[in-house]
Length: 165
Image (cartoon, rainbow, N blue to C red; front, top):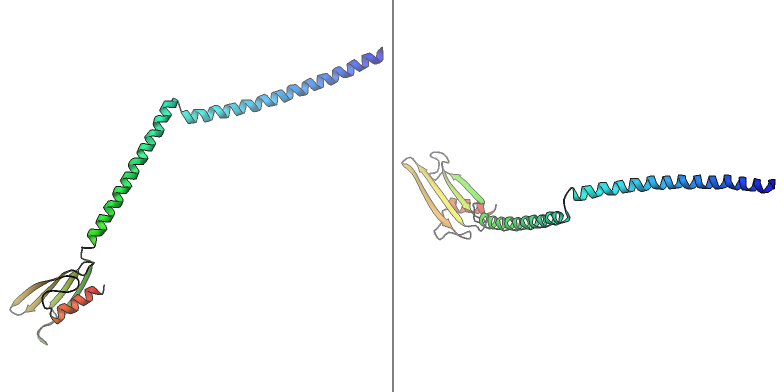
């Protein structure tokens, strides 16, 4: 009989050890689950931040609308940029200038010819002739690198300088 009581006592110790091990595993698992649930709650609070699901839908729709307005603004800026580039092609982009003395050895190079051209070699040539009696200024239109008026040697040279730029 003593041997059967020893067996029961040994089994009780084993049962207690197994139960204690199960309690420890249960406590560790409970702690792990507690921390995971805390993380999920924190993420849910960040996601919803006190808003209802319908409010979240409104936020998303507002962002989509804002994105559409930004896209429209970008298209408008692209169009404006193209118009500006087209208009700039007609602005003065090429300049040729030549100073000269039309009277030989008398005086200095105070007369000049200036060619002001756009991107298509159209514009104007301005000629200023300085003399003791006064200054005379002439202007001649230029279209596609040519003038309908006869150009002086100096005007043609100023035009050539401008067209090379």
